[in-house]
Image (tube, rainbow, N blue to C red; front, side):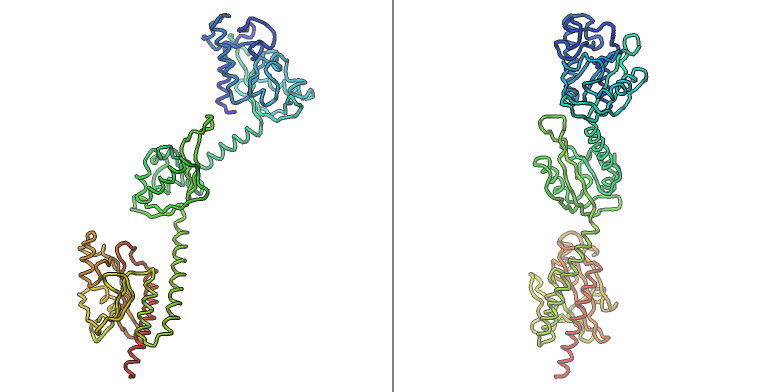
Length: 493
């Protein structure tokens, strides 16, 4: 029972009601007229015509339809406390029909216990002497004798002279009212600054309501995001998100939350985020058939958690690879075979190519490598070591000079422009043509530099980052130990 319905009821009964000259569609007095709406039919402003003709009939029928179509229970009393109106919702809640209710004086003995009747009637009729609405809670009696707690809103009805002519009372069951208030409170709370995003999208998949969390996540203001296509906000991943929203509109909400990786366009540049999302199909409660109004989309930014989980999985996998490599290497008689076996295990999930260049005097020579044109194992160079012609400033030479690691990508090259630019960048550095990201790390053992280990990734993979450098240095330390052992064995032979 919203305030708007109560206000509408007041207007329907009419401030111009004349209690001393009731307009009856049937021309008869007494309670319970043939239309079942009460002793008096109230004119609806000037449209009733003021007579007993067809205008009065249509006015009474319209009023009866309005009262019976209300979602709130409504009854009305004249100035003497006699029930004049009783609609279908009041009959549903209390069980008394309009024929049984209209014409009775007050609620005593039928809708209220006699012990409570005086107090209830007094509080209801007190609305005649006070402007505005009066809100009360009463325990009323159903026709079967059970009790129901209702919340009422009562207000006076003014006659033609501006004097109080009666009271109308709209009421509903308290639990229904509380449920409604809870639903409203919940919706308002969700659309405030809660710890997850809430976006309501219409059937065209455009935001209509955005809460503060969602506005921050989408990189805009709560009003600035309204009505804009999601494609203007999400650079990558919008197709999957819109497909999920369209599915919810057509089929209903999925049974479990879904995770979407998206790239957002912000003032600071593009950001990649992971949103754990849940969806609800919104349908109008005012229609017999469910008419979709849109989708309620609720999400939380779980990027940090997902990245931490991915890093933990990556570390677990790499640790497992090193463990398996150590067991395999322990069975190798040739130390250089042990070095290439280590590199085969290290490549899995880490890089596409690996190059092993060892120091011979002042030069680096190619000692082992993976195939340049296709994936494959790391093998020793056939026919002996081949000197590599690295130009000045080459990442491998920088790693030797710094006694550390160097990361680089084709995007950092002066001539890198698309696929052809990346291929030229790789060819200039004596690397396979599909190489786009490189990580060179020095081989050190017993305080000496033995060479350089270079890992390469293709353009469809991400560039090397700091955690990758730590892993590459761990592999390089083990490879350096195997290379040092190989040289010691050759020197002793």
